[in-house]
Length: 302
Length: 229
Image (cartoon, chains in turn red, blue):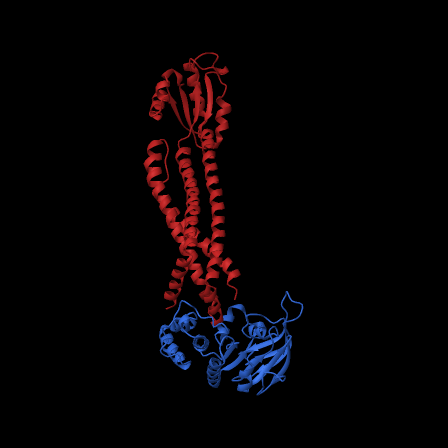
């Protein structure tokens, strides 16, 4: 009895304020989509960090024929220098976990592989790519140890920490994430204002009913429930739309475009996207109910 | 049933108190007219009884409850013991007669079986049989007020508050409404009725409490509307 009555009141309320309900659903859809995007970007950064930090190395580029740095004044690296570097690297264990030696030819091959869809690949010649030692550190933050030991030594062109390159990339992604989050917060604030206004209008349009409910002694809970459900249903539908947007983004943008185009990195999986959906639903519904409750305290005074 | 002890009520925006040092007691089963000019404090008196307002000072006891100590969440249960009728009926225009009366029970969570049993009973009591499924705008003013009284009485309250219930009705119709209120009073329900209708007060010969400028100036059993008349 109670439930049926409340639900019919909710249905009447939603229909009576149709324009407000539609506006509420759309703002919820947009703000929760942005919020979901922010969460997805963060998950993506985490995924990429896991993927890349596992692979990053410190590269010690050796002097080639065309190297121009001061330490390469003596021309290309000699076999003795090369052997010395390898011995010194071995002596740095356990900080140095693994050492790979890469010849110019191998570097060229890997370069061709990585940029096979790009015109850069065609312009590169094997000579332009220097031979190098690729060093994997047990603690990637200890890069400075390698840098001081090998930078500037004869036969070494340069020491490059790939992590630093990646960090710059991640800071761009971090900025994106922050941007999405800021917009999401602004949108959520706008949504809250809209809920407050919707509740005000709803309370006004149902003031006859609520004044009679108060007089005959209906409880606060009973009087407010139709309004709260109205807000919660709007939020849930909005969250549903936002969820569809997330799924569509994963299906067509990530799986359909980004992943095949940028094969050198990993992208977030379905479990991450599906994990975000309940977060959107709960955020939306809780936000709606809390804002509605605060507003109704003002407009449905007993 | 209703006891005011030295009650003063001052609204923030006004210089003069709406009610000043009112002490009065209304017993269970009484029928009391509350008379006085507009602005004399009748509505404030009724709002205080309903706990829509709180007294500034003094004590109000209604239906055994000290209203100054009644916590917020107990107000709904308290109001279930009081029925209220207004000059403007306050029916829901999109509900039928039956639905309007049932609404009062449904929103306090009464089971459907009880609603279905009690609503026809009370509609018969107010003599609206045969008009259960009319909409309020299809009824005369007197009939609408009967629906409003049915709604106020359907939960068998201990007290019935009527704020100028005949204010919008012609004299003949008013007599019918007064007979109905009298019948409800005879079931043991305390009735407090604010009114401007001298003819009715003079005819009924019930207790009269007169307010003037927020002060109680007369409390007379079997009284008339005013000495001047």
